[in-house]
Length: 518
Image (spheres, rainbow, N blue to C red):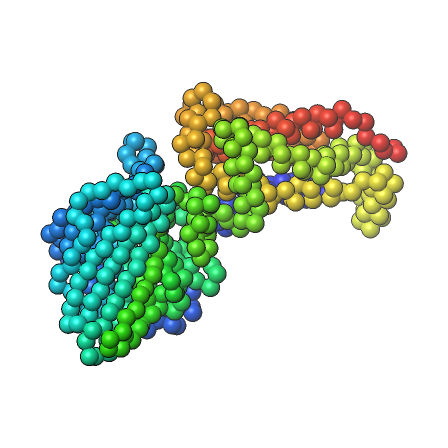
């Protein structure tokens, strides 16, 4: 039983670190999904995804105008229905510069085109920089005509939203039926550092069959990825932000490729036939914004799945909302983490109390168990029978110290994931020198204190280990301290507070007399 307890304890610790990537893999390999490779339509996708249709190989010769809101700064082309750059006005990087989500100084970062239809020149309804506010929705409209085909691309910008609704109206005034489809391209920049992330995903994603699939940047760089059949939306993620395109109807096919330091995500709509003297409208949603769960839920189509809460998302989401609710009252996310930790500890208090009491009882029984082992060391059957009788007489469950701990593991992982990916903690101050709970403690004070509390916690815990095993276990606070040095200070704060509460609970359990019959 002692060895089992050691194994369970070590498995718990190892699972927190080594097993993390198993529970929360950063990306799924696109090429491993057999159904996608089986449904690729090589002929149509090769024609539809001609690079000349969405990105010029030569640097563009264009001029631009900006449409700005309190949330977004969008740079539009004056010559073609394209966006060169999108900047988030309320978010900055570590250097204080505003976050740039998509940008390409030599080309277009977002471009919609019609397959099989070429337009020489577009007219746009504005060419001047404009700032919009007070709930006024502004429309940027591009119009053109080619061989009796009239098209208008409309970008609807709401100053209160990170969404840009797009409407493509196509009218066929010719005497012929045309067959076409909409091709939409999003170009997002990447750096070498983005390929090395393991604890959160950075790169392109798509949503299909009620499930989000992440594609490794390395796979795209090595070989372009083509797939088809009912993709609900596409997105490009960083840790805290996302760019996305959500169509009215599922995409027929998508292609991923790399160009220099960019990832191109090209999506093709379903084919449509437009008869003579008829028209059609295609509606899509562009999104450029933070990975805030409430904002993403307001988009459509499970777009909040861009936030990776891991294997225990069903627990992580309520934890996040509890964190946000408490913050709305106390106004400090560090204090919110403390109160959520206290709340979770109170919920599991009876369970952990039972666990600690069982461990203490097992410790008290150790002298009796040792006598039984010495007496029946040559008779395994009798030995087990006598030990089980000792448990039964004293009403001790040998697994009582382990099982309650295992039940709490999913909650730990859920909270761990929330504290690691929640944008709410980004640039969120706590107290004193900790001014960003998403970054490590710059002076390593909290990880060291956490290690000290972990040491006292283990010293106070009832144990049935022999001296050698006990010394091995006592090395864990040192290991954990070094591992926590570079972890977000919000996560370290949770562990520190949890240790303090555990020490209090163990003190109360140790103070209470164990009612045994021996």
